[in-house]
Length: 331
Image (cartoon, rainbow, N blue to C red):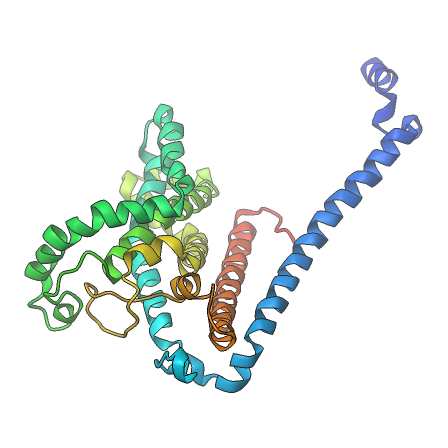
C-alpha cells in the first residue's frame, strides 16, 4: 500500500487527476500523428492506383482483356499485347519461388530449431543483409559472373542431365546463353530468400513449445517433431511468406532486366532470352509515344492488381496463423 502511494506521489502525471495539460496535448498529438500517417498511406495508395489507371485508360478501352492474351507488341503500328511479358514474369517469378521456398524453409528451420543459440543471431543477420544489396548490384553480378558461368558450365550440365527427359528436355534445350529466364530465376531467388526466410522464421517461433516438447517426450526424433508439429502448424504462415515473396519477385525490374535478355517471346526453353512486364516498363517508358506509354501503364495496372491480390491473400493467411497461435489479430 505504501509503495502504491509513493508511486502515485512521485509520478502524478501517469494518470488520474495528476495528468497535466502537456500530457493531454501529447496524447492528442500522438493520436493525430499516427492517424495522419495511416490515412496518408491509404491516400498515397489510392492516388497511385488512380494515376496508373488513368494513364492506362486509353489502352484499357482500346485493347480490353485481349491485351492479356495477345503477344504482338508493335508500337509502330499501334498493336500491343502483354502475353509474352506476362509469360516472362510468371516463369521467372514462380521458378524463383520453386527454388527459394525450400531454401528459405531450410534456413528458417536451422535458425529456429537446429543452430547453436550463439550462432543464430549472426547467421540470421547475414542472411537478412542480402535483402539490403541494391538490385542493380545483383544484376551487375549476374552479368559479369552468373551469366558466363551459366553459359559455360551450368546450362551444359543441366542439358546433359535433364535434356533427354520428355518434358524437361524442352526446358533445358541446348541453346546456351549468358542471359535468359534461368539467370533471371536465380537472381530473383537470391533476392527473395532473405524476405521469405525471415518471415518463415517468425512463423516458426509461434509454434507452441508444449507441442514440440510433447512430440519429443513420446520418443520422436528432432526430424519427426519438425515434420509432425512444426511444419503442419506453420503451413498457412509459410504460404503467406511465399505469397509475399512472390509479390516481391513479380515487381522486380532492374536486376531482372539486366539478366533476362530483353527479347520478348514465349518459349519453353529456359536458356533463351525473354522479357518481364516490369523490365519492359523500365526499359521503354521514358521517351515512348503516348500510345506506348498507355500500353505500358496497362502493364503496370496488371502488376499492381497482382501485387494487391498476393498481399491480400498473404494477409488473410497471416491472420489465420495469429488466430491459431492465440495472438489477437489486428483489424
